[in-house]
Length: 316
Image (tube, one colour):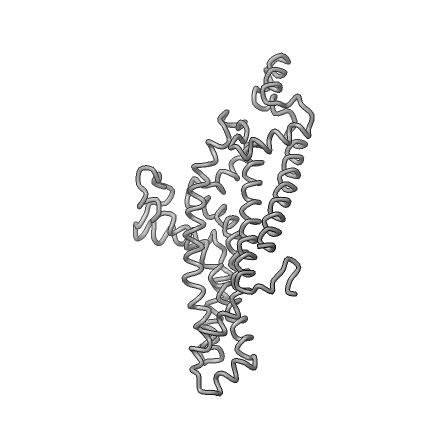
């Protein structure tokens, strides 16, 4: 419990620092938000009224705390481009991105664990070079190229979906999930290859240890020893890697959403940066940072549950 409390406290402190630095950075580069909203033809009186309404006439530290309280209450400010509450714009897109990320992560876990076990079990066989070549190829192919290839083959040729025509979840949930599945596969394939390579290396290294040799020499089946003992002892680095993967695939979704025409958070972030819509960018940066930090925290908590010797600074 002490470890979990310290990790949660570390997450909270880190997020406060990230939010402060993000708010300070955009406070500097955004110029005059009132001018950006009302335009160059606004009078000074109109600008002063809007600054007062938005709280921009208050000291910086007061603005930050008001923004932070608003962030926790769901009030993320007003978009410069859409003149709408940022939260109302982000939530539907955040939902789409989270579904894509979760589908992608499930695919990664389901595929990488058995493939990693199989690769470790068959390590040194005559087909090792073929498996290694395929794995390296999958790692090397960029997600955007896979997205273009999948869109052409499964969208244009086989007509499993219509590229660029994403069905709204509220109207066609099954169609939306099927559309997101193809995007999730493109995100997952390079990560599956990385996970298989990492898991295989960890398992092969663990298989060389004395307790494994002793178990096999006593007549235990090599595959059973691999599944029951070696895999369990290799879970800590595997879960750490999956935690990092969970954070990284959010970044990978930005490019894939652009190719597939998915109205997710990544595509919205790119558009908001282009439009200099700083309140939206500010909120999205903090949300993405929270996702990355949360993924690492969850992985650490699971690892500590598996191996209670783990502490914040490493093993005892």
